[in-house]
Image (tube, rainbow, N blue to C red; front, side, top):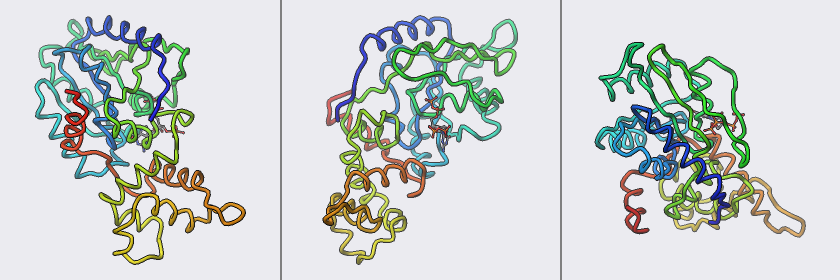
Amino acid sequence: MAIQWFPGHMNKAKKAIGDRMKSVDMVIEVLDARCPGSSANPLLESLSGRKPKLKILNKRDLADDARTQLWLDYYSGQSQTQAIALDASERGNAVKLINASRQLVPNRGGIEKPLRVLICGIPNVGKSTLINSMLGKKSAKTGNEPGITKAEQRLFLADDFWLYDTPGMLWPKIIVPEGGYNLAASGAVGRNALDEEEVSLELLKYLSHNYFDLLTGRYQLDYEHDEMATWREEQWLEAIARKRGTILSGGRIDYQKAAEIVLTDFRSGQIGNITLELPNEWTKWLAAARVF
Ligand code: G4P
């Protein structure tokens, strides 16, 4: 799946993040709980070096709880790393985030030695929503489009807890093909940059293997269970199109419209609580793509 890149902007952001990294004690990375591996940016890993890291699995309300727990265990097993799962709009997130950060860097605290934290995340993982809800603001979001520079902000969650918002923008980086599809399905990739039909077919393939009951439950398809269990993803899309009546003149199926329905349903949680990757799947994909 092709994605448009803006190397100039990326290099600028990389430099700015690298500069800021020198004066922070730890890094918070906001991830999408539905695809934690894919929504991480490997650049951050290299820029942050050995600094303690807090991974936030955001949008937990849309993700599969059992799988979220597996991801939390996976990250907590990494050195200098902690992980918590959040729904950005919930109350009490600031306390959870501050407590987890203080555990990671116990030697900082008090007005003299405030804990300085950089918060990062690729677009659409919910970083702005989280920051705004923690600050009790409605919205302070600036553009995520290329060319719109987001001024770096220092936010005071407590007198001795300084949160720096990412200078520049952390771009999504697709390092394995499955990750590209998962980012696209979750909405992290702009609509113009993806082929919705292709993405919906990959999504249906994964859902039919891993969330068969949720899929059949959502679309109430009038077929035998055993028959559907043998379907390829194209057959799922066709059946959904017929059920939802996305039919063009002459009886042709409007696959584009059906794809939009599936993606919108997935993104809004209408199909159910779903996570598109497991830690062991993610590491397998990395190994297959020879990315370590
Ligand atoms: P960003 O700064 O990382 O780019 O992401 P942003 O906060 O703009 O959030 C992207 C979308 O994700 C927004 O939806 C936001 O409401 C939604 N979102 C953020 N956190 C959560 C969460 O924990 N759970 C759920 N369910 N949704 C979350 P949107 O449709 O793009 O905009 P809006 O009209 O809902 O604000």
